[in-house]
Image 1 (spheres, helix red, strand yellow):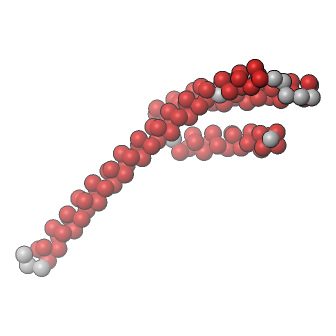
Image 2 (cartoon, helix red, strand yellow):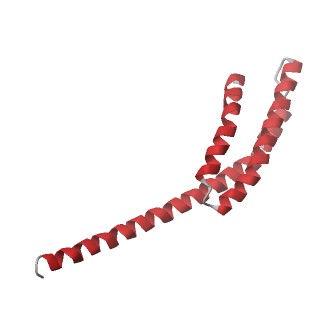
Amino acid sequence: MLVQHQAGRSTISLDEDTLRRLTADNLRQHKRMKVLEPQVHAALEFDQTQIAKRRQLRAYPGGTNLSKSRGSSLPFVATTRDMHAEEMRLLSLRLQGNRSGSTVDENLRLAGVFPGIGL
């Protein structure tokens, strides 16, 4: 499990860069990224202290620390959930716009065909 944690940790900055690029056109998402970054780093720091404690004790540090660990990720989870909801809302609006645009395009094509056949 520790190996997976370390592997995931190494990709976080790449994921943050990708997310920043994907949401660059959205000011609200940009603001959320500014909130998310310190939350991610705080969660990573907390994890590092838990790992250090575990290594020092050579055992799992106990149930209370697990609860604190889960609690420390709640702001992170809320921020990412808000970002996901915003992107899904925007995607839905874009899809609706594409559908209505397709209808307009189809109507324009049909209007162009009728004069061509002498109607």
